[in-house]
Length: 180
Image (cartoon, rainbow, N blue to C red; front, side, top):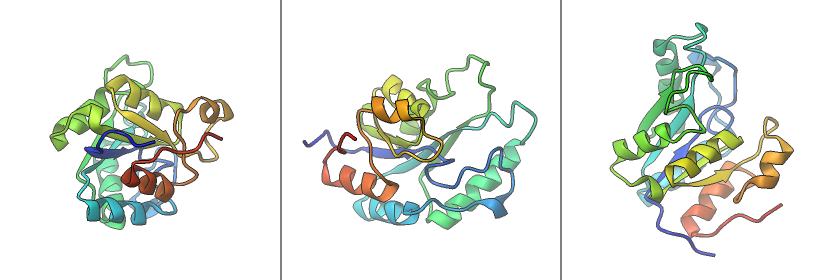
């Protein structure tokens, strides 16, 4: 099945683009996920804008600073060859902000920065909150399960891929993932 044109691809950060190190403020601990660099290289070659949308509640919890999050993002950007925008939510889960996934704020802001409509975006993530943010913003979500992904999240995801590189290849080809 083909889908609407891909205006931009947005990624969750931890567990999707880079290995999930809880509340990581150390750029030296940044490790790209398998296939992440190749997936981004394909998107750059296709001229597809890219961005990151990430919850970073460690800031509100006093475990990280904005500067530390930016340094980790900069290191990830270096290792992955550069993304077009990085947007993160610094609020605690109970803050009620509009930006924390699964709310739409991060996706809407990333789309605005990229000059595209959120409905033309795809969000790739590893948990239900990532797909919820996509849905809330009118975007499409693709789940790439990891050890942190709950079985119910996989069962309820409308679109899944076994890994990041496969997800991006399918999106560029205009195909959807198989249901498990």
